Image (cartoon, rainbow, N blue to C red):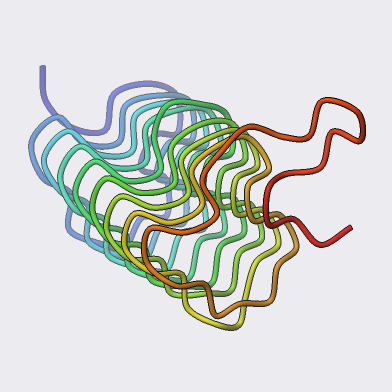
Length: 166
């Protein structure tokens, strides 16, 4: 297939792009970080990105747009804006679903922040391995959040996540 596929996919790109990376309208427009194999798939997925993106990461519309942190393998996937405007470093297999790490400033350990808005607005405290699983699980929580905690569905009455700070 090749890299930089679609309108303005790599316009103004300064980072190295690997095979099958930067697929979609403006996918890596003004990107400064390195893009791994099959990463940055979707319209504006890595537009204005400054961090390095590992293979198969940042998949979905606006997945890593305006991202400043590094993104691990298979992270920031599964929905729109998974790591939009993120400033923290994201480990592999983390931040999966719509807005999972939107405007996050925390470092996110492996396999964490899984669910819609699971870690939206979290930080600056770190998020431990396997933590914040479920929609809105740790939304707006400044952390730190221990490994394998904050797991579950939102409250059926309030809609707040298990460790969400309103």
